[in-house]
View 1 (cartoon, rainbow, N blue to C red):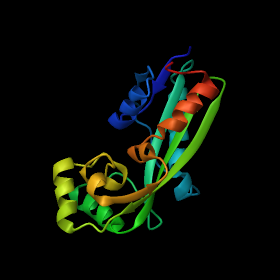
View 2: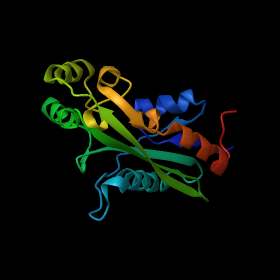
View 3: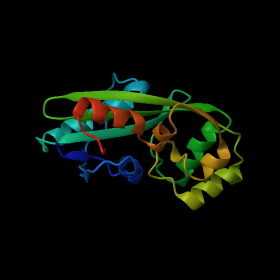
Length: 191
């Protein structure tokens, strides 16, 4: 069986892979995440996952490499990671009482084969009071999260009315589809 590399600094992605039973190494490179001008919002995460995978493939020749990226799309705008508390507040407030989409792009490659895909989950937020948003930002510091929130944290418990699609996709990795792809396309299974 080939060695699996999870090319992500995300503790959540690493934990999901571990919880699914995979054995892997983590490697992190600094990859330019600039989007091409012709990349649509819906394809941004997959585009970035493929771009990262290409950079890792140039270094790791024989391994299976998994790269991923997650974006939040609200009001036709990509919400990345917040710059500071004010930016986090702006993002969460803009989604309050509305629905948005979380798109995770995944690229898995071996020397002979590559599979890329995107998974979309629709999330509906309750109307959030400014004090609730401020409490969340102050106590959970969501500065490493696209859209400034983690569904598995307090704001997800009290503020998310419903989701359509994968809960784990909102956490940053559509683990069911990743598991199935690694098993069927690359012959990697924790069993």
